[in-house]
Image (cartoon, rainbow, N blue to C red):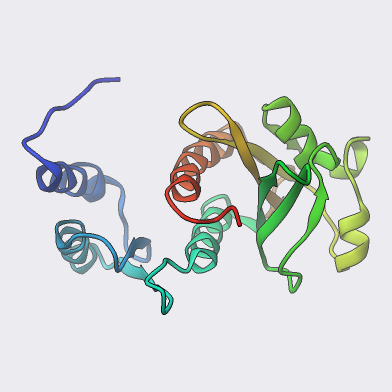
Amino acid sequence: REVIFTSGTTDSINLVMHGWGRKFIQAGDEIIITVLEHHSNIVPWHMLCAEKGATLKVVPINDAGELQLDVLIARILRAATEMLDADRGTLFVHNAERQELYSRIADGLKTREIRIPDHSGIAGAVFTEGKPINLADAYADPRFNADIDRRTGYRTRSILCMPIVNKTGKRIGVTQILNKRGSEGFTSKDEYRLAALNAQISVTLENATLFD
């Protein structure tokens, strides 16, 4: 790792766009921003999208001027499932008072909210232990709770589940990606990618009014 000092926020954003963005963004990719951001974080990504053939997605706000978080997180999850070539994903947020994990978004499911004890199933094990779980065959693991499959009519095969940790090291939720397509299961590269994405989800959760 190295630290790069710049003259300000605008220079930093331009550095990310010109350096990382030009190297990794490809045609068909989606870049997600919000309408609340300063123009210095909007113009560079507009330019990069025009150059690369990517799409800029803007997260809307409600009448109170607050970000529509479900829209934002749904787009992040959709990007995660596409990036990992998986069928669907779920974000579980921890409710400490109720000792529950509840889904704000279950991408690909009609069920908009799932609530489970924070120690139950694969998601509960990941949240409790703070370690990722990567299973090629979910039903072969005794920790797997098939109740959600029975309730939704879905059949889970492979699972990649990782904790979401805030900047103080506290676990605040988990992401769970299901059913890698055309493969025996998720790879170590998939784990690395989801860990990087979870860092962004953590910032989103911490910087917004999500825990209601």
